[in-house]
Image (cartoon, rainbow, N blue to C red; front, side, top):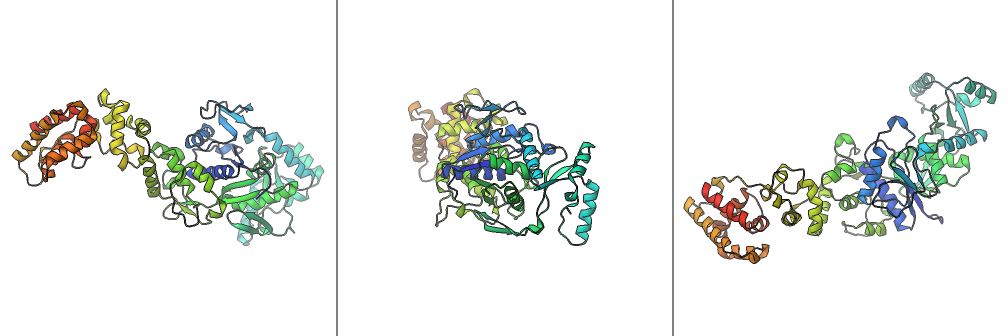
Length: 513
């Protein structure tokens, strides 16, 4: 562990919504910073202009804020209500809705282009990098020949031999060029330590003279990320396994600049149940998709934290608050192998969080989902109040695994049921016995006072009236109130819909019997 103050970063590209894999990378950075009293930075890597998606940057920031993984420094939305105490150090020149907090900015790479160009020129001056004017056609032919000869595809250093005068002449003539890192041909193996994988050794002969600056003047990820990590004093680079092959190139760059190499941690891939890499082709992978389905942010955080990490030491604990995760997190418990994204586990975790939500909060959280359902939109206004929704939420809380499912099994709480008379009789009972049970229930419930119309009291009264043959009495009443084969107990339905609606539905059932 470094003796420097811990500084880590999450550096997404604004190419779409926040992927759950990106969320895990952000979360592990966040937890590591919290565990060690460090600083978590949000930086935006937007130098690949061809992949830029309008609004994606704002969406990424909004997703992180909505999920509770809020940076200490870096990029924020200017109208962010979650961090009103933060004072912006500057406003973005490129993104009008974005502010930046911290003294290491800009935190958006497209606003740091002159800085990268300056460092690239320093490498050229020190003979650690060089201009390359090779055309795409020549490079393609070179790769084809190397492939045919069973050689590792890499640049052949043709332009390294160009004189300074020749380079200047060709630049003056307007020839397009890139800047490449000169990887010494006699370089020994590259060795670096990874907090997840231990010591990693890469044969330097397989490392290409990577491009640092493209023909459009924009830096590649390699140059920009290394320069930014150095200037922002990043101590630990925590990122996905897909960046592991690039790490030797970054180590070479640190050495070329004579800079201290940070510590690395490469996180295991996220996999589908069939062990293929998690991707959009297999279904939803964006954080926004899961929130839109009714997964709680805290449940999603808990689930994502366990994708590749476990608390160790024989612990069976699976439900963690964010502070508990911060306290328990350690890279020694991060697995090297891929982690399976099992939505069944996510459903289970989400249900555990829903079960312990205070009813008022649960009602607030399910209301937006109810407002999208036809049976709610057509309901009377008295069935759209916070109090009424709270009663519905309480009845459904134990069985609810996602917020978006609220009311789907119980539309009769909002809409009058259509009663099938054939469902009303209990097993083997005839029409007369069923009519007698319904009338008994109507008289009993009509005689209750408002103070007795509680969930508990209704249960006591109806069970007592049912006696030993509960089905004879309670089944017709349940169907009368719900119109369904499966529903909550009749006392729960009666408590939710109220006395007037309960009596009205019993009478309707009597009429259709």
